[in-house]
Length: 171
Ligand code: AMP
Picture 1 (cartoon, rainbow, N blue to C red):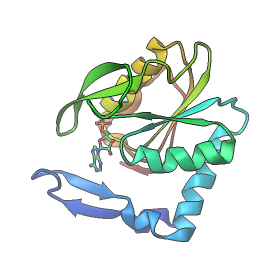
Picture 2 (cartoon, rainbow, N blue to C red):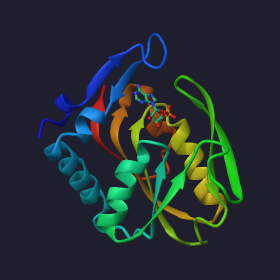
Picture 3 (cartoon, rainbow, N blue to C red):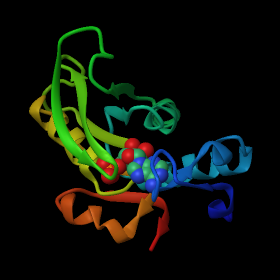
């Protein structure tokens, strides 16, 4: 499956100089949608997963599909002020600015096996901050999976202690 051809490049979004990898064109393609879920499921083979954590907002789409297929629960990691109950937060530097992510304090029980999902791995800041949230709650990270990896930003250096998977890589 040529999944790359279903991903749309949008230059200068959300800021000048950024080439935004738009996955809405992948998601609306039934074959591409199925393919990327299947590839992520292959990565999960042999892993015990109790909880899938999806990062707002595009990580919710793959994350929920995967949690359903794996028969486990889904937990959202969200931008500040969105989660209604008690939260913990981590701040990080993004490819275009800074941001904070939050998780409910009761979202993960100590020792639960956690798979983290997002649409795109750029600098790895968002993923690293999410790992910190999960680990502060006592979760055990069994892997991180992304649709797209911008390999030239070397996020894997940040995430070297984890098992990282991406469906499509851009060098
Ligand atoms: P980072 O923390 O640098 O790994 O950035 C990852 C997050 O920012 C993901 O949630 C992406 O959705 C978003 N992001 C960063 N760069 C891009 C890009 N070039 N195209 C689309 N999304 C991006």
